[in-house]
Amino acid sequence: DAMVIQNPRYQVTQFGKPVTLSCSQTLNHNVMYWYQQKSSQAPKLLFHYYDKDFNNEADTPDNFQSRRPNTSFCFLDIRSPGLGDAAMYLCALAGGGDQETQYFGPGTRLLVL
Amino acid sequence: AQSVTQPDIHITVSEGASLELRCNYSYGATPYLFWYVQSPGQGLQLLLKYFSGDTLVQGIKGFEAEFKRSQSSFNLRKPSVHWSDAAEYFCAVGNNAGNMLTFGGGTRLMVKP
Image (spheres, rainbow over the protein chains, first blue to last red):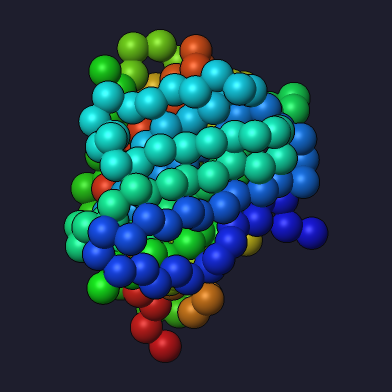
């Protein structure tokens, strides 16, 4: 069974139209991460939650926001997507007896028209 | 600051041949080291990790990696490559204080029949 579930797998939005990406987990892990990965590049951390504590990377644009209403779910909101925000968005989690290892979801591919 | 270098952007090997992917890291303390594999359009799958102990670690899919502190390296190896191993491979170092990962730039593996 999948540990990290990302919906949708593909998302098409229009320039400037808000979009929300979803991540859920079945493991009750306390740490959740959002990464942005552009073509042929390594994943870039946007922010992470340690339980409900939100940690934003210094260079994450204000256009990107996140919510974690409970342990199982985490959302990435892009308030006004630009063409440069087209990318794969990866959710990852860590916790249980192994806080140091991150397990990734399948990703959501975002296309901005 | 920690950093990871994967010197080879692309590698092509013949099916059945052996494989070694290079990874060099920079980190002040004993690092947590990881190898992930990413197939096109997919998330990252953990192949193996090193935290401490035996410097030769075994992973999934027949992969192994060796930690060499003197060379600051954590190279990934497989004795016989299969066509299904064609993918992008990422080496990462984690800081053991806050489970943040720093990724290398990735190595794209192509497998010739």
